[in-house]
Image (cartoon, rainbow, N blue to C red):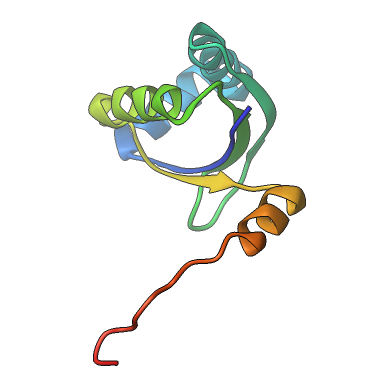
Length: 106
């Protein structure tokens, strides 16, 4: 299953919701939406600084990740970034595929 690193920052409205609901409530909400699209939450951590939480999530396909991303962003409660994560074996496979590329100006 494709794996994604999610980095999120709460808006002021989202932070108020976190204060009202607590971290356990938000984790349950994340697990519910992810499971609804056939995924699993591998890890979820709250943080402070640039990001308010980070998660590693497995989805059956990138379209499921896109669906969650759109729904979350439309709520206005979070700003998120999703980064696809690749295994060592997947990168090894990528290095075996030859690509011809001409850089700009070359």
